[in-house]
Length: 91
Image (cartoon, rainbow, N blue to C red; front, side, top):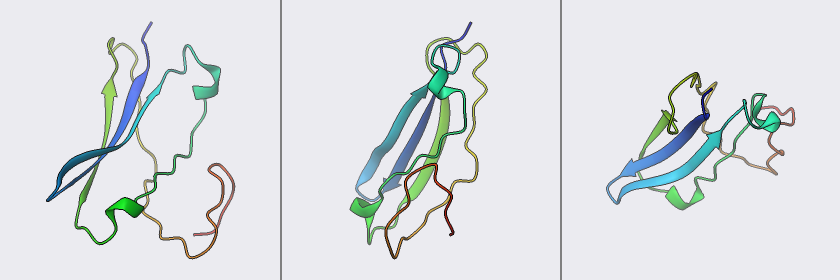
């Protein structure tokens, strides 16, 4: 039962709304979705702009068992090489 959930990240600003991430996860059907996932989104195109970041979770088609949420979202400015998602790192 259920067809997973979507994670959506949008930037809203004077230029309008821009989708930065739209990711469908379905742990029932895809084993690779059965763990926490670090996701990195490059915000470089928004540099110098004042924007509001909006994080949402949504049902795909069937909302049954769509328990999903974001954990520890952060905006980080890297001064050196960025680690690969999922690797341990120091903030």
